[in-house]
Image 1 (cartoon, helix red, strand yellow):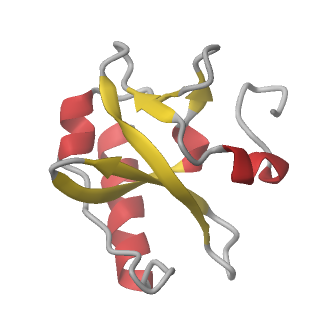
Image 2 (image 1 turned 60 degrees about the vertical axis):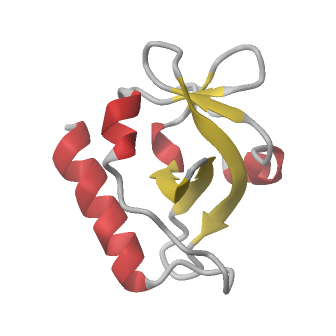
Length: 109
């Protein structure tokens, strides 16, 4: 963990299986994997949100909850509107990354 409460790249493998909650503690979903862009080194949590398709959340938004989970500074209804992703081939397309980044920059500010 970094001094600001976030995570460093050494922690990436530890995210799988963690529960993600919103700012009020409402369950958002469960981390199925972490995707790191090989060019930009940007990290995204891939969150399973049944019955919806997976969604990606920029890792920089997540903070530890103290009980092993992750908290986002957003409402679950906000994440409901986030772009869905398909990682069947193990990568996020540049278009997907751009949509995700635009969504969170525009709405999380």
